[in-house]
Image (cartoon, rainbow, N blue to C red):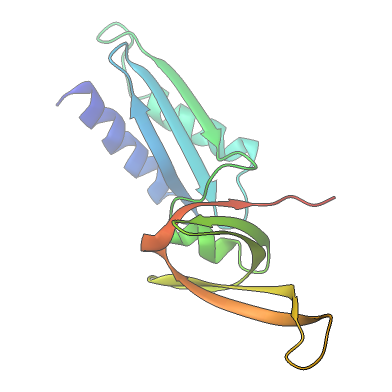
Length: 154
C-alpha cells in the first residue's frame, strides 16, 4: 500500500467515526506534506481536527516515511465545493458567480441538482416613472456556478 493510499484509508476510517464531519480536500505533495480540509454539518471544532490528526498520525510510521500533517477546517470566505455545504448554508447570504452574472442573495434551498437564491432588487416601474422594489428568485444549476462564497455580516 502506498503512502497516499494509507493516508486515505486512515482518513476514511476517522471520518466514519464522526458522521457529521466530511472531507472537503485532501492534498499530498511530492514532499509528503499532507493537507486535509474538513467541514461539518454543525461547524468544525478544534477537537474534530485534533481527533482526525491523531487517528492518522498514530497509524503512520515516520521511520518508514517522513511527512508533515496539517488538518484544518474550511475557512470563512472559502468557496463552497460540495452540495452538502450548500445544504448546510441554507438561510445564509451567498455571493454566487456564474458564467454571466454575480448575485448576492439568500440561499433559500439546495438539492443535488441546483440552488435557489432569493433577493430584493430595484427595477423600473411597469407603469409610470421611478423604480420599485421587487422580490426576485432564481434557480441556478451547479454546472453554471463558477464560485459561491458565504458572506459574513456583523
